[in-house]
Amino acid sequence: MGYITGICNSFDEMKSAFVDLCIAAGWSQTTDSNGKTVVYKESDGLYIMVEVGALTSAPSTPDCLRILGRTSVNSGDAPTKVGISNFYSSGPGPVTFPVTFHGFYYSNVNEVYFIINYNQMYQFIAFGKSTVSLPGTGLWVAGSVSPHDDTNSGTYLYRSRPYAIYMTTSGSGYGGTFSDVAPALFWVGVRRDSSSPGPFSDRNYWVHSNLDASYPWSLSSGDYKGNRVGVAYLSLYFQAQPQQFNKEAFLMPVLAYKPSNLYSGYYHLVASLINARHMKINYIDPETVITKDGEQWVVFPCFKKMYQNEYWTTTGTGSTHSGNFGWAVKKEA
Image 1 (cartoon, rainbow, N blue to C red):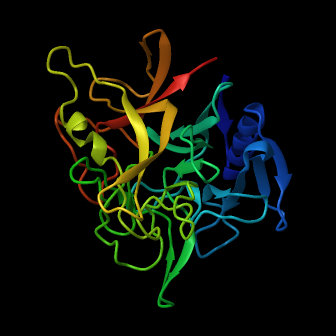
Image 2 (cartoon, rainbow, N blue to C red):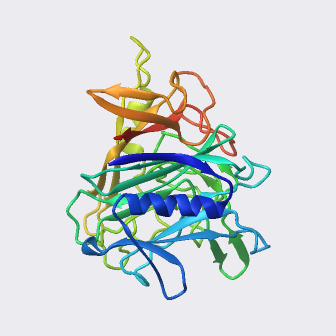
């Protein structure tokens, strides 16, 4: 178990810090057939490709750090990469260096959390092995965004640098336009643009459950463009926070569900994270360490804290902040 923090002055330095964190957490390092860095735990069948990418029209300009879940060094890819990325300048804008990073890992469970902070904004990469028994490897990967290139029906090239933030607890936590993102673990469910072809910025998490062999990474009932459960299971709990009596906010579980591809209306729990929690952070400053039942938890905003009224439940489309939505990561050091 451990906690690591430091400063990075570029995406390349960020990659090095991330890989160092993985190695400290007991993961091995190799390269794939394309020369890309892969961290892995072979005994568990867990493989993650790590790269600095470029989403702009000038490919020599790095603007993201991204990972790709796999089932081997060279194959079994998740549908999209996830990670940390520049936003468009008309939204929150680019990552500005230097950034401070916070890395968390554990001896008793395969979970790794890598969080950066710049200009009061936060982004993350996280991954681990599900503690739920599954026919797949159980590898889950998540990031603030899904920075990748995709062609939509051969007509439009969506270089999926995200535009802005859209988060809500109503319904199933659906996103706004195709370039808005909910930068939180397993958050987005129903999409307004779910019928559009191609993966968009909100596909920022995957779990290799293999419950449906045709779509082994998907958390929808069919392919990865479909609707997912998202954060719907916590909708009422979010709306009831913080408590009126003492303004305290609960630590709420981070769960991932997959609709059954065989039985309508049934759902499979595919991941229950041990060392991360959703929460409302109305009265808690970012990076505050809180103690619950003898455990220490470090509090972060989902992206950028912006105080709203106590029972606020949505950022609205095109936001540059995540309001009172936040999360906490267990600190063992």
